[in-house]
Image 1 (cartoon, rainbow, N blue to C red):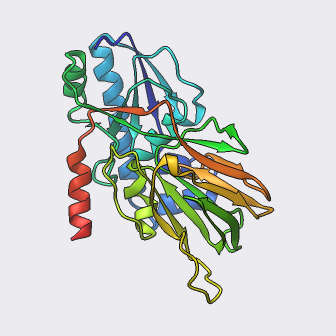
Image 2 (image 1 turned 180 degrees about the vertical axis):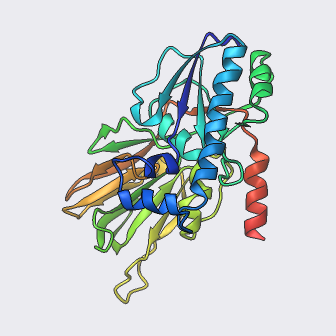
Length: 303
């Protein structure tokens, strides 16, 4: 693969954010004092920054043109051969919102503190992975994403991991109607998770779901803290379905919201709004993907 232009996307470390004057000065004081709540942040920051510096050095040494951008400043990404992210899965999830068909090579900047299922390199092997890519020998995988439609209109942010539907106030009840496979139920709960196969090892698994093969076309959903009102008639509380099954969620909340792949991409979901789930025309391509990390994690935590 020829690499004429590469975009490097980096995150700011927690230490960098907390140590900035715009944040709570009390946190900076805790950092200066080496308080137990923030003691490890500086070491993690140094590891992360060394990875960022290494990526820039390697690409420059190989005479590959690169641009560097903070992930919070991203806009739709075009005219690059690949995107290199440095951080963990969170950085890939955020970057993916701005990518349609450009491959991503994720570099795990702190392998000790981050699982990084989606990442395909570390600081130590980044140079070798770039050489493999240049020789068209680097492994890659194509992963499905969800195209959401709100009241029939496509949402611009594609779903790589999961969607959380909930009331905007965490302590309030989430109220909605769920339609699936010709069945309809009125629910009261703490909300619900809907995940891709790739996202099935994340929040939905912690909520009681189970992992799916990463290349599966299936989608999984699970209702959180369901209020059954003393009845056992409710059946649509979780499971696996296909895009063709026509999942629809209709809001009964004045202050409802849905979140895409974490806290940074959220939309109002108010009374009468309809949210439907469709297979995106733009799967994400991850370079250097090693499924053994995912399998090893699942084997360890499911035993």
